[in-house]
Amino acid sequence: MSVDNLVNKALKRIGAVHPVIKQGAEEIIRRAYKQGIYVLFSDGYRSHAEQNALYAQGRTKPGNIVTNAKGGQSLHNYGLALDMFITNKEGTTATWPTNKLREVAQIAKSLGFEWGGDWTSFKDYPHIQMTGGLTLSQLQTGQKPNIKLKNVSQSTSSTSNKTNSKSIAKMAQEVIDGKHGNGHEARRKSLGISKAEYEKVRKEVNAITSGKKKKPTTTKTVQQMANEVKKGLHGNGHETRRKSLGISKSEYEKVRKLVNAGIHPSSSKSVSQMAKEVIAGKHGRGHENRRKSLGIDNATYQKVRAEVNKRA
Ligand SMILES: [Zn+2]
Image 1 (cartoon, rainbow, N blue to C red):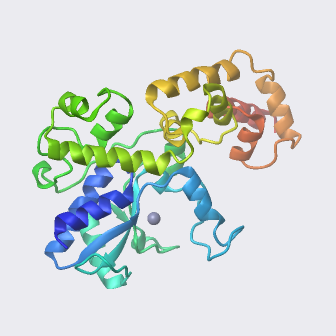
Image 2 (cartoon, helix red, strand yellow):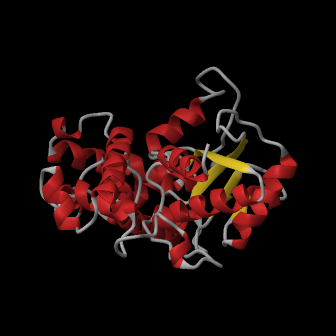
């Protein structure tokens, strides 16, 4: 299998990861290939639902426990982590020899990734990640990482471009958001790219939409989505929620307006009332549980929390 084929295979598998992570994945594969190591990735972006299914494994479902993270608690849920494996030249096998993973990890680290094999408490040899210094809780509140690959000249990577400065992932997202109209030819012209390049965008669009829109989102009304957001079913942070819902930015704005209308002006309970309830134990333990039980957004919950601290 050529290195380009390995790259394509890996990029399909990792889904809607951050564009910089995607570029990093490609760099790692190409650099390892030159060293005679064939590496692929089994996991990249995971939706909250996929993460929850993984968490259930070995707990409420059969199998071994493979993760301690629920939806929203893994960097994979933010598209900032990859899990690698070693394959053969044909790309048909999957093995995890520590010595080779270590060599690939050296490449990844030179690009600015952190390696799970360096962790002291729980070693995760296949796992690499890049957060730009943000903690998980900062990501959970919707903060966006500012990440960049080290030691890469832009021209070495094919995902970072031949024809223009936008990545395939970015163009695909724009197509999904409806920024380039309908019809392949119209979209291609609007993007100003070649047919070959457009084919890549199209594949990416299909990969993103088939991976994430298992539930046809069109059957949900804006009101239903807003209710789900209020219940905390789509995590925190606007971008996280929008992706979890699998809708466009303009659609998400409608949801957001309804959520705000529900939470802020007409919230039936005052912060002080909610704080009393929390102190009385009516909303269980743990911030996330309490927030969900109250059915409020993170900002409002922070006010409740401050109030609880004042009183408790
Ligand atoms: Zn991982």
